[in-house]
Amino acid sequence: MHQKRRIEKSPPLKKDDLLVITGGGGFIGGNLARYFRNKGFTNVRAVDKKPFREWYLQVPGVESLRLDLSHEQNCQRACKGAVEVYNLAADMGGMGFIERFRVECLRSILINTHMIEAAAQAGARRYFYSSSACVYNTLLQKDPKVRALKESDAYPAMAERGYGWEKLVSEMFCEEYWHERGLKTFIARFHNVYGAHGTWDGGREKAPAAICRKVIEALDKQDLNIKIWGNGEQTRSFMYIDDCVRGIDRITHCDALIATPINLGSSELVSINTLVSKVEKIAGVKLKRSYQLDAPQGVAGRNSDNTFIKKVLKWEPDTTLDKGLAATYKWINEQFHARKKGKRVVE
Ligand code: NAD
Image (cartoon, rainbow, N blue to C red; front, side, top):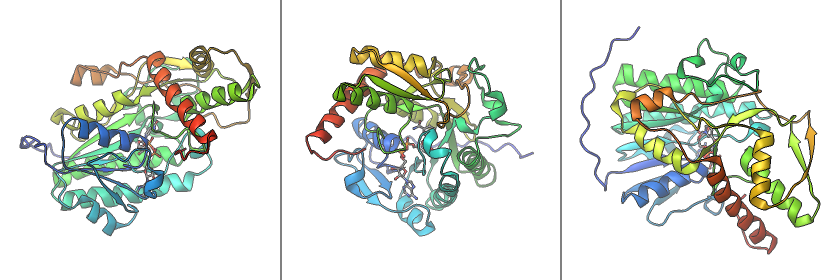
């Protein structure tokens, strides 16, 4: 048991305080940098190991650094002068990636291990960590008609192999850095995030982007078939990116949530078949479905129990899947056709 630490009030955040966002070349990190910039923050630093041409968003006015954050010194460089640190860097992808590349997923432990220490040494006031619903006990997710997962369902632990265990241990780092060292840490467990400026091709994409792309390809080739991973009955909830970045901001600035993992996800549960139907409707097409039963498909069902977030923040992600998917489809469609014309796009 740890002693309860007294929470000192932080000074108000100023618009020129330095906010450091790792994974800034990726989907959520890039959108978060843009969100803070749009809110008027003038001192935002985005850090990623990818070459700049591969970043989904390079936000004007945001300092961009290319650093591999699995190395301690690079984390120290990234955190220099930081008032708040948002760690969204991880080697990750959709089911197709995390089932096949468990070692890469586990090695992300290096990023959080060095980042949280560097943030503490730099005197950062707040540290946000992007965890995942993959920390939840997989034995509770064997039925598509799953009961929604609440925060206490992570223990007794039986996380997703590789990726989920890395997230769970990194959560523990965050909890102990608060209890032992007084760094205010915040931990959100994201449930499937989707939207524009994210991976839609190449093997790391997640279900909503993959389905949008497959529908667009079918229309383009006039081959009205679609291959679906699994039997299509597996269920998930999907959170739109705008809700995700808003939620990160709210969670990180709520002292009642220090060192306390919280679900950040939509509670609108749908099957993959329903997701396909929704994208078909947006595209105005009906496709013949074939099911790939040996493809990676993850747990049978997973949903976010939002009781806790509603209680603490009086808010929950609420963009409907129909609305979020329409915007996502439009963006991927533009990317697809730009690439076809030979223009450079980020996949
Ligand atoms: P993403 O792959 O688009 O972004 C992650 C970024 O981290 C990439 O740009 C990658 O280049 C960068 N990165 C990886 N290793 C790095 C290193 N050693 N040094 C510096 N940068 C490095 O993924 P995302 O969807 O934006 O996810 C952001 C965070 O949210 C991750 O921690 C992820 O595990 C978590 N998460 C995402 C989802 C989701 O649905 N997208 C769900 C649960 C959790």
